[in-house]
Image (cartoon, rainbow, N blue to C red; front, side, top):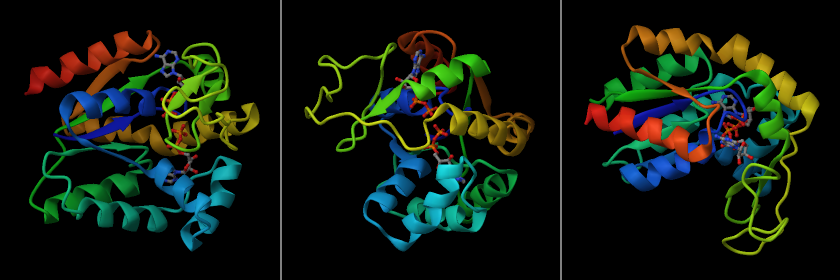
Length: 216
Ligand code: ADP
Ligand code: ADP
């Protein structure tokens, strides 16, 4: 299956992606993770991306599109992929369609996670991540077994630089303006699977699982 997961910052895309990848055996491709990895490794791409990310703005399309198109050509995607955080503009969606068409394939489904803004701020500001393995937690909603430590490797959890209340608000605005037009773009293609993301993590996944299995 070739999937996109769409939704505002803090909606639960990464959290659901982990379960979708396990259940449907697809490869998770997160552009945010790719940028954060590049920042950690101090690459040129990381340096370019960081100033945009810290301000809560989008990294320019030309930087993002090339990375994703290259990634789609890697040989590990035969069983499909889940794109998380991409596309984020209509320009990126058009570039994605063109790249897939050139490869003789297309998207199967776009999962659209819908969550109200007040919940988003609470989720993103309370998010903690493991700097080693990337697992995501929440200080109230998804606590680690030992406070502040990753369940998988015991690493001390950190808060993302862009998960401050001010930057999260900015990212939600950017989402409304630049990314939400993709909902109509994919609806017109008959690909949209709307999911109520305000429910508990397991219940959200249950909706996604049912929606994707109906297709299969
Ligand atoms: P996104 O990738 O869309 O930015 P995440 O998956 O990282 O969002 O989730 C944001 C935060 O909200 C995380 O701390 C996560 O643990 C928490 N979270 C995710 N889904 C839910 C949910 N359904 N209910 C409560 N908290 C959630
Ligand atoms: P979230 O969904 O929680 O906002 P992401 O990890 O997907 O977080 O993205 C973090 C930041 O990385 C974004 O605010 C943006 O600056 C940058 N970014 C990630 N993906 C893209 C993209 N497809 N286009 C432009 N910028 C991106």
